[in-house]
Image (tube, rainbow, N blue to C red; front, side, top):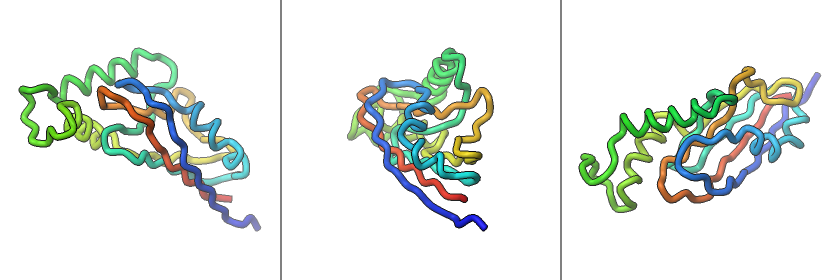
Length: 145
């Protein structure tokens, strides 16, 4: 009988410019040693920020990332004419909070035979919603057998 196990690691990503960025390979590189020890399980990813987000989406065509950024900018107004009260951290901050809430800050992905069990065209995106990017931290928690 297999014994359940846990592993956890915090990954710090270098700053990314505003937009949606495919980060799957960076994440896997950081967790591959622990990941390889799981036959079956779950990997949970928590982005520890409120002005960026994580999502699963297209991993091949970069136009999808560009179009997603365009969409977000059309539906969430920015600038001085935007109706937001929260402006202490800059005019891009409140829109970034809303965009972060739309996509969320966490993901759960199955682990199968030591690998993230993503679909053929799926990848993990970091969506940076601020004009002035900062390093972002993701806590990865893995459990399984």
